[in-house]
Length: 310
Image (cartoon, rainbow, N blue to C red; front, side, top):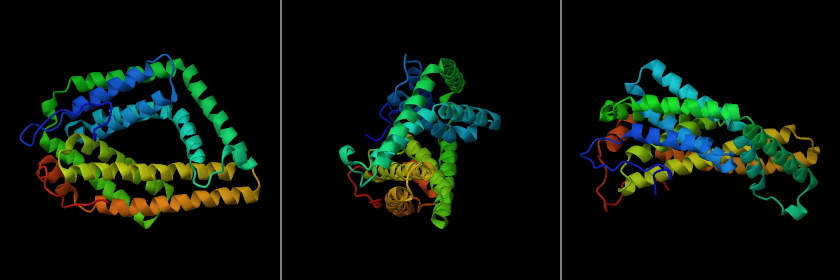
């Protein structure tokens, strides 16, 4: 299944209207609101809300050519701020999972004392961040109200406002920004450049889920490849944050060096694999990609794909 698991894609054919991205955005907002209004925010709920908001921001970028500048920037800033209000609880969980999933990690019974102490510190930090978020009911309610307001405004706009031309322009803009991010990441493998490539790839992935024809082998391959690239870059970013945490942690120089070496080896492999895959994904020009996706100029079902991302 290539659409997000929580969102039902509108059915369409090449002759029909383009995907109703407004519907996808509204449904994702409804799901985020439902998660926020649960009695207690679990790790799963925080993760789900952040995923929903990323999808909405991706749809917003598709709709951008039909929105006033102030409309777009207000909605985008609101979505960003709501996601940031949940970031401490989510980031602390990701950091803990990243340490525990680091290749070469010993079993808990034989784990070196410095790593065991670091893991315990991260566990305490995560518990504190999670409890603080759960206790701050006012902030969660404000976030829910903000999302409801955006959803109402989207309801007031007819789906016909976001026609094929609008969505094509929005897709080209994101794809072009992603190609530019790739060039910067290829030139300098900085944390910032790789993170920007990941962000833009995530937007593109959500957009392709909405717009591409998942019945064709070529589009399925493209959707899967962008998802894979986002995951590779996400793992690399998590390791970069863990690296900074290790540098600031209290442990012996030898223990720090061993742990940093493991992180560096893993990051190096992830960066190499990600950049090779990105080069294959982003070799089309924005107009060509948009024409194929929006113009339904795809291979017929059953026809061998002319593109490979493996």
